[in-house]
Amino acid sequence: MSEWPSIGVVIPTHDRPRQVREALRSVLTQFYPGHVEVVVVFDRAKPDESIAAEGARDSASSVATGKRPVRVVKNERTPGLAGARNTGITALGTDLVAFLDDDDEWLPGKLPAQVAALGTEAEMCTTAIEVDYRGRRNARFAGQSTVRHVDLLRSRMMMLHSSTFVFRRSALLGGLGLVAEDAPGSQNEDWDMLLRAARRRPIAHVDTPFALINWAGSHFEARWDTKISSLRWILERHPEIHGSPEGAARVYGQIACWHAAIGDRKEALRWALKATKSNPSEPRAAVAAAAAAGVVGVPTVMAALHRRGRGI
Image 1 (cartoon, helix red, strand yellow):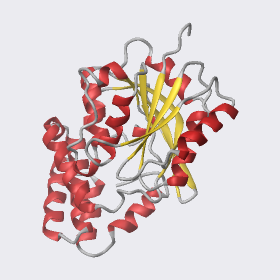
Image 2 (tube, helix red, strand yellow):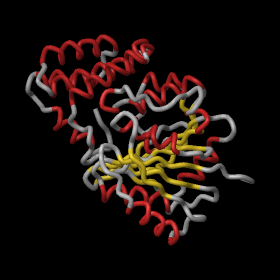
Image 3 (cartoon, rainbow, N blue to C red):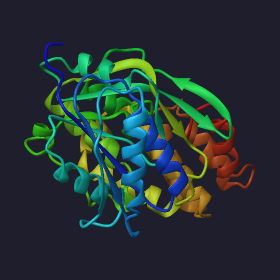
């Protein structure tokens, strides 16, 4: 490319001093011919200014092209992941904006591949991922180079992880909009962003694992009530999901599982029945029914699936 667009990277962080440094290092060591800068956003925590100094040293000594400024700021918006990301977006002035969670890492080659895939038409680009669960790794692929709105109604497509998101900043500040800060617990705001983006234009996708996603020790893993409310939020925000038998059944089945996890047998069975009516082959309905009956625990099922790089 004759001119490489500038990229700003937003890394929100909360109580992960070691992991956020590893995440930052994976950005600073990326080979990319254009300008890259990083904003580390501290959410509900005092900013650690030493990270900027350490980042400057890592940048100066890395094999990446040029120095990469690192800033440390505090989330001044809604507490939580969404507000922290928006704080980073508005603090940047780059052509593109990329997200990286503080417990994940980018793999070599990510930025040039995504910039090439964006071309001149797409507003957003994602990549495949590699999931690490307690030392066991599994790659997750989409099997396609373009993601459309209908694809995301049928499935969340979990390989389109937020740590792979790259946007045109003009879209985030324009018609696409910022991350939804009213998402309960800042959950499913990433699916909402995907749905909104794909409704405007197809999402470019690089089906190579360019991000390492750490599933162990997630802040959100066992927040069952928040999982329920965030899924109900996404159904209200995107009612067209109800019109996709597979997609609706998947969400209904997840809600059923989370109700079973908190011991609400009646609601678990009600949502499991809705899932089965929408798609008789939906496996989450059976999991929820078994969990509601006390045959198996939802955390046990989740752990077994995570070892294969999958989730409920």
